[in-house]
Amino acid sequence: MKLRDLAHSRTGDKGNTLNVSVICYDARHYEHLRQQVSAERVKAHLADVVQGPVTRFELPNLGAFNFVLTQALGGGVTRSLALDAHGKSLSSALLDLEIDAPSS
Image (cartoon, rainbow, N blue to C red):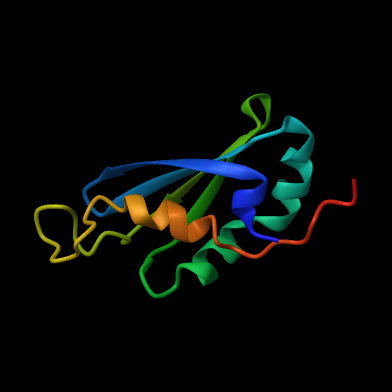
């Protein structure tokens, strides 16, 4: 299944760094996503774009995760030739990540 089946996302950018929040539709899926969506998997899934490290912050009270992707915006909005220099489409690309279906 796709990550988008269990979560939605929001993004924010500053310079060449992108924040992508992944928010569970249902808090019961938080633990499952915690196991399935690691910083390493996010980095591998977006390897063509993200050149720096990826850090995951867990927000269990919100049923969410915040991923900080460094060197992800081609130098930033004012320096990049990318059509989506703000990285909004990267959140959609992340939601295409294949994950295992939860057991319940």
